[in-house]
Image (cartoon, rainbow over all chains, first blue to last red; front, side, top):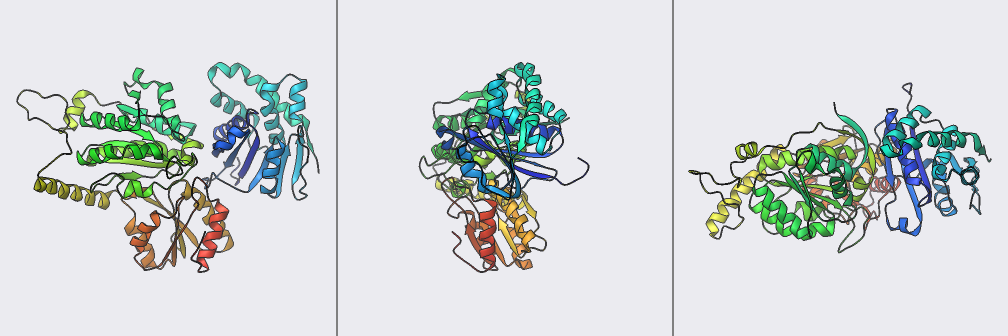
Length: 186
Length: 365
């Protein structure tokens, strides 16, 4: 960071089991490794048992005030319920990234930069189900390179238990792939 | 060299307990603080520092195990969430009555009753006004970040031993569950039995020939003896009030309106103050880090300096607001804003309430 102020407020939302919370954790840990202030605030209420999960991640060059937010710079959306819930929480001019798989009503706002990332389909085709979330993360980082790939690797090392470190190259491959398949929609 | 990690508040607190050289943790699982014992069980510090980690059969057992260990001069602690802490109140009163140091952690959830598992601050009265019986006080620390979950663990034990008084860490579900960067302090070795015997001349460490019998009790029967003890306690409490108040002030120097908030409400309020400043409203935040002793003098001097109003933001029906009113003592307006039952007021909600408050509105929710 070349002394520039940066404050990125992100909501990541989808089904439980899609790796929403761990994607947020890897992003936050990578930010920490890069020297940023970070926070990770999960939904931990009973709604998790109903199937949806979301996490607020903040990356900042300054002390973070509230880890709890209702307006975001970026929304990363992985199912229809989450799109319905969070489309209107993105700040005007903000970024909305979604996986079109299972989306019956695409985003409608015209004041956002909207991208689609076919992570689900790609993960299915390439048998990369386990790193689906890293494909999504890669798409996001292509559009907003808030942390560099080197620090993603460092973040993975820190957040994954040692016995899973052999999976890091595959995870990084997923990140690169996400950057290749993300498309501007509007 | 201290160590940087990304951790949940509950995990940071558990790690800090090991690093602080705590001798014993006794607990019983309850959301949203179960990670404390889970972390300790997984870390298995008995193998490294010799710290005991034990799941008791109930919260009543855990607090009485703490009572016993504390009587032997050990650094003993427990953690729970609201309904569990209610069960501990008798034990806490006994520990206060026996003048023993210990740390109790409450990661507060919505109530009354079993309530909800989401964050709340409705246990303020229980903690600072005496949830158990008798004239006693708990030194109460209110962490507002994962860093403070770690730092206050050590501080709570320091204060508890300095004053031979139980200390409470009053956290909430949001601080317990969120992850932030935390700089962990270097481990402090557990005290040896000799060090305990030397530092705690009151502790029951095994009677030696020619020494006085030591009795740990909260029972005094003779009224005059009990009153003498009460007077001694009150003197100690006065000393704590004079020396141990801690708070953080943000933007209070020129503020016309000051939000008073602790724990996760202080974080959402900090953002609300940023929003207010951007809109041209001169707002500030006073964040008590100790709830007892309360930053009464600090609030009073802000009121004397001409702050027009104080807005107490809490996840409750308005509890701390009473202490804010007592401190301000009619010099400025004081109101409360907050949500209940596990619902968190967002920074925008607080900003809106602050604007209404500044415009003279009284009923804010």
